[in-house]
Image 1 (cartoon, rainbow, N blue to C red):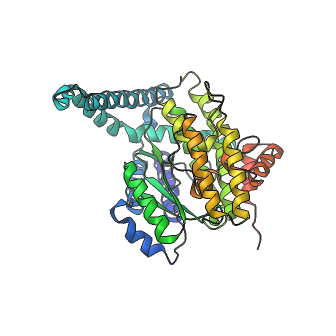
Image 2 (image 1 turned 90 degrees about the vertical axis):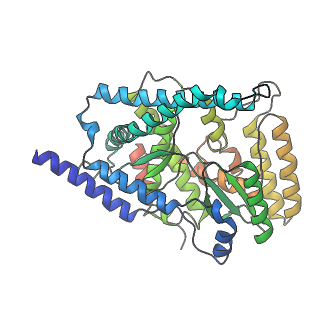
Image 3 (image 1 turned 120 degrees about the vertical axis):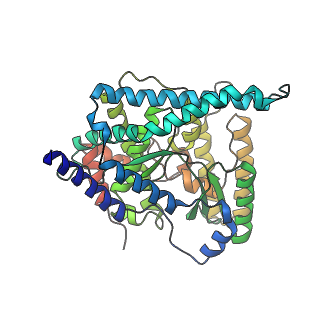
Length: 418
């Protein structure tokens, strides 16, 4: 009994310490900060409050940890069952949307009453079981991290903690004369596309910058924000990706994330390498027979630009990766020559080409490349990264490292130019 109590107390102390020390990615305050915050108004997402609530919930759970009383088979069943219910909720919501968009449906509220009732009941059961499933997945991921010697007294540091939730949108701001992310803001969940466009136009005209409002696949708060999705693989990979950011938080690539593009590329590329390698290992270890879920298609659309999942168009022989890489390189050349307007006109022309080929790019500008170009973990370079040499150098470091653990520790020891 005393040993068990000590284990819970030790784990809770670790979590409390990390919640106190770890912050989330937030840019330094600048002269435009106050004006920007005032412009965004109610569109801003209250990230600090979300972190405080999630941290309290996680800490409270540590003192009971009911998942520890379950057998391994029961834990696996709990995880798979929650994924099934999330997929079912998504299917129900799709059916409800179809009824409301059907022009022949006279009374969509009445027609969807049973569907909405079933959805709401499922939603309640998901909310009730989510904490225990999160804890199971956290513990499984920590098992994989311990294999790479990420631990202190048997506890991976920082402890891997996440919350499945609806994610905010992110406003990315870049300079116009070069691709360089200079600011960002978290925006409210479920932002409408017309509001995205309005915000971008207002920010661009007010500060003479290039901006982009974009969805994200996860967010490196502590606890980490992960999307509620039926794709178990995506949850696992994203949890490990964001944990890597937390691990690197106090290193140069973490502390310089917001002010040094090189540090940002190293950080994001390393995290992407970790998510692929350790994510695959975790799935093989715990869920080797788990099939892709119906949400995999949505996952692919959401992360295509980050992970270079886009492939040759089956009907038009259009290769997203090749065309985007060529676009980025020409934009860099135009901006280096001082032709800002020409570069922006060219990006809009190229966006039309991508849309015609079937890729629904709402915006293609400096901010787009500043955001997506940082995830440069693909062989040959990510398409949005252009001629960036930092990502390939990080890949080379991984190739020379005997293990993924040694690789991440080597990244943590990197130092920038004084």
